Image (cartoon, rainbow, N blue to C red; front, side):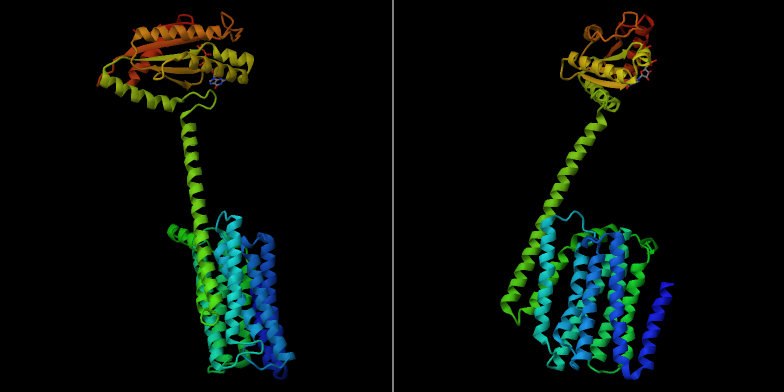
Length: 488
Ligand SMILES: Nc1nc2c(ncn2[C@@H]2O[C@H](COP(=O)(O)OP(=O)(O)OP(=O)(O)O)[C@@H](O)[C@H]2O)c(=O)[nH]1
C-alpha cells in the first residue's frame, strides 16, 4: 500500500508540472515541501516507537529532514515572494548544508555504548562547531542575496558533493557494521536517503542550477521527491523486515564502534582547514578544538576500557572463587577437593610421606531433615562445617564439602596415627555441639568418620585412598555410627 502511495505522489507531482505549465513552479513547491515534511513526520513516528533520545538516531533524522524542509520553504519564499532569481541565496544554502550535521552526529553516536555525560558534551560541542564552520564557509561563497559568480556556485556545488558523499559512505558503513536490528534499520533508512539524495543533488547542482546539459528543467523536481519517499518507506517498515542475514565481521563492528566517535572531530578538522584561508583565527580555533575534542574522547574511552578491564578482572576472581566454593557452607567444594588431592598426591610421591584422608558423614541426617525440615538441615550442615573448620589446625590441611551431608579432610604428611587423633577430636567436637536430634540414639547430631592413610606409589591413584576411607566409613556406620574407623 505505502509503495503505491509513494508512486502516486511522484506521478501526481509530474502531472502537475506537465498539466499546469503556467503554475508549474508553485505546484512543484507544494510537493517539494510536503515530501521532506512527511519524511520528518515519519522519522518522529518511528522515534516515538523506538525512543526519541538522540542515541536512537530517529530524532536526529527528523531534525535533518526538518532543516531540509526549511531550506525548501526558504527557496519557495525567495522564488515566489521575493522573485529572487539568484541560484544560491545564503540562508537557503546554509539550511541545505546544515541538514548533514544531525546525520553526522547520528553516525558518531548511535550504538556507541555507555557514553558518559562528558563524552556527550564533547560530541555536542563538536556538532555545534561543525554547523558554525559550515555557516562561515557557506557565507564566504555566498551572501544572503546569493552567489556573486558562477565560480562561487561551482564551489558550493562541490561542497555539497563532498558532504553528501561523506554522509552516504558513512551511513552505509554503519549499516554494514550494525549488529543490532534497530541500528541496521536506522542506517538502512539513512543510507538509502543519503545515496539517492546525493545523486539527485549532484545532478541539480551541476546541471539544472547552472543550466548545463543534460537539464530536464522543472521536471527535475520529481527526482527530489524520491530520496524522501524512499526514506519514508524505510522508516515505515518494521525493523524486523529489514534483512539481517548479513553477519558483519567482528573486526568491522569493532573498528566502526571505536572509529565512529572520532568522526565528528575529523569533520570539524576538515572544515576548519577549509575555513583557514578566509578566517584564519577561526580556522585555527576549529583545528585546536577538533584536536582537543579528539584527544579528550580518546582519553575518556581509554579510561572506560581500563574500568571495564578492572571490572572484568574482579568478576573473574569472584567467579573463580564461586567455582571452587560450596554456597551453603562456604567450604571448598568437590571440584576444589579433586584438584587438591591430585596436588597433594604428587607432592607426597616426591617426598615419600604418608597422606591421610578422612571422610566425615553426618549420622541419620535424612531423619534430621524429615523431622526438623530442610532449612534446619541446612543450618545444621553449616554448624558442623564451622566446627570442623575450627578443629582443623594446620594450614596445609584441607577441608571440603564432599557432597550432601559428607565432608572430606586431607591431611598431608600425616600417618594413620595422626589421622586417628584428628578423627577422634572431630567426633568429640561435633558431639559437643549439642545439636538436638531426637531420632538419634544419643539425641544429638553426631558424625561417623572413615580414615585412611597411604604413602603414594607410581602405580596407585588417589582414588585408592578415597576408596579405602570410604570402606572405613562404611564400617563406622555399620558398627553403630558416632565413631571413627581406620582403614586397615
Ligand atoms: N538440608 C540439607 N540436606 C541435605 C543436603 N545435602 C544432602 N542432604 C540430605 O542428606 C540426607 C542424607 O541421607 P542418607 O544418605 O540416607 O544418610 P543419613 O540419613 O545421614 O544416614 P547415615 O549416613 O547412614 O547415618 C538426604 O536426605 C539428603 O537429602 C543439604 O545441602 N541440605
